[in-house]
Image 1 (tube, one colour):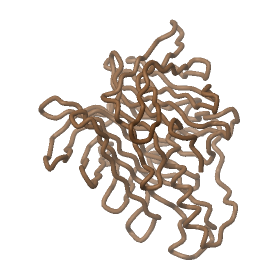
Image 2: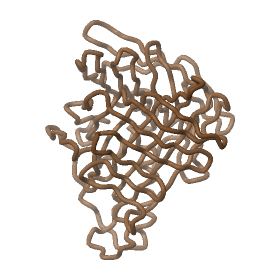
Image 3: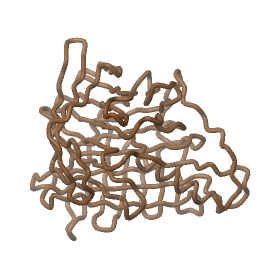
Image 4: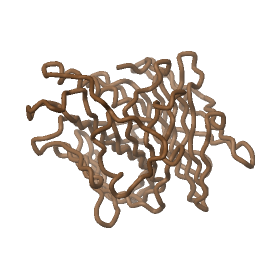
Length: 358
């Protein structure tokens, strides 16, 4: 679901490639029936236009005060001619973003890195998760634990994220539709209920933390439907061990262009949610004093299950979790820690400041 930075990466790739020989690249199409293979599919898929390793979660220190965090590594393949022999040709672009939601300051702090792959400074391995970008890195170790390190400008995250449950394939065994056309899809799996430990450095203090997190993995070659302006997405770790991923993609009239999700119960049984099974209903809106954008920061995801309708009310850790990325060429969107009765997770709201476009 995370097309925000993808759009930026494609723009960067186009700009970098403008001075080089370009051609229409034959990107692979996402199709049904492709089975995931691990650990291979934890690694990069460089033939596809874009992909990401997207972690979100809640942390607590010894004082019990919560922090929200997000760490994401993106890889994008620009439309540069792969036959171009130049080592400077941007054949792959790597971008990383990290953010910390601090309810004491009631502020979102964030930082990012960007580089073309190569020269030993950036790259994403194919055999397993192993992404390097300058002084930031993500690796999956032999014991199956993801380890992420992002020494940022005003804070630092050094976390171990250990799976406690199997991979959760979304959509039709990992083929996840994002629009009315079959090629508007991604390969998509999640790893909910990650057990987190490590350290956070903020305000000059090193804090030992523990918590729960969520990993989203997607790769694709197709952008959103042309009528889409943004989306609403949530990933929730439920206290009973279950997990919910739900989303809707909005058109210009505010209605859903497409929707879907996955509910995995505490016993491991999984329900795939069709577009008609998911509704996103705003309950309270917050206006950003920085951008003027109005976000539904309190909302319900309502899902239809075999036993009936279930409502997941979402409440933010605090309202001001907007990321205003205009100074660095990124869009404006809201992404923050939220709670629901019986669970915690993250909510992402895009297309409210302006329609997403390349």
